[in-house]
Length: 336
Image 1 (cartoon, rainbow, N blue to C red):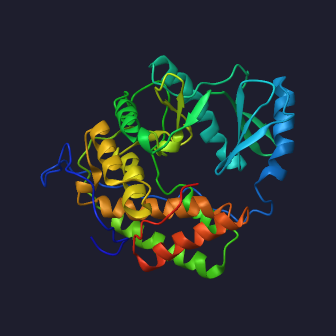
Image 2: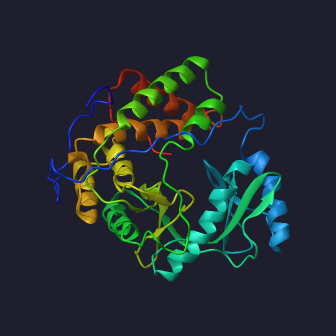
């Protein structure tokens, strides 16, 4: 399949195998929407706390004592005084995604899909100092973990079964939409930047002309197990809807498959559970190698945005870069 990360091992037999005569779908051009100059302001707790407090003031809420839950594409805070989670996006370019996320949440509620719900705050999203801000109901539960991969597969199956012509005008899913901007802006050595651009160019070249075996559908767009919340009833809730779009379901399935084969996050048995939950093993498709390269780059560039936040993140970033450079899947990555 050309150059790429070479995996060690593969989990059990597929529930549904691909055939050489499956329907052909040509991949559209990817990665053209995001660019830009390096950001002069670090996106972190110090820069987002003032945004949080102003957004809460406008919403009639208090940001005092808020807890930073996660820092990635968004800064995610849990309010102390109200059962509300606040999502602060990195830049004004994310406003379209924030608007879509609000619309998708309402649609999924109408479709009875177990997904995150908006808090009772009018006129979302807000914009504060160039940051789109949204408010969500707090889900009293735990984050998804390895034992939940089967349920992730089942929930993805229900999302992929939604009508593509629903009430929300969903965009074409672009798996590389944010990668170019991350590479341009991240505080990394120039040599790393060159290596990532070279790896990205190789991956994009291999996407051209892929033949996808599954039908296009509604995608989640960031379908990893930590985008599940599991409340006391044990039934998972899907969160993080900003990447929802229309495209090939293989992209959603490639997330967990890459975490298994490249990162080593899952055991053989856990990955087999995911396959059984969804009903299709994307690793048995001959085009998966190309998707795996893209997903490994996405996982690395997502993490590198916060490379200066801690020594632990910096060490993990360097570990992932070694895999990108030498093309070997050591299965020794750590999740963040």
